[in-house]
Length: 75
Image 1 (tube, rainbow, N blue to C red):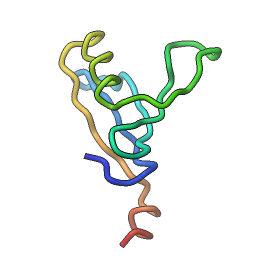
Image 2: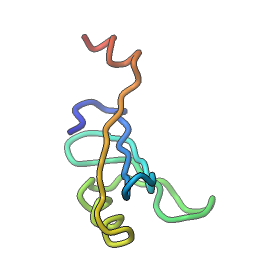
Image 3: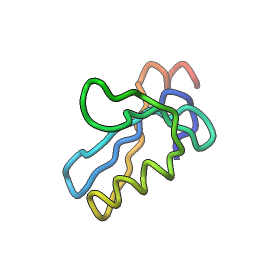
Image 4: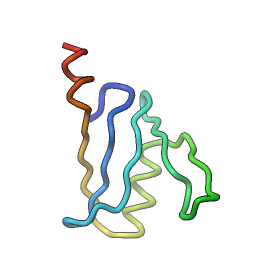
């Protein structure tokens, strides 16, 4: 699971990337709320984002990423 602010969380359905969001802290992520340019970015619980995409796509797999520069700086 993510441990640092700024980690990217990717949601996959099979091999298809269906969503991404940014880890903030605890169980909070920064995510786009809906489709289209006019929809806002919001803070939301990771669990709620996961449930939404699971309803849309079925089985969801999450992957966590961190920029190499940030990972090196933390060590």
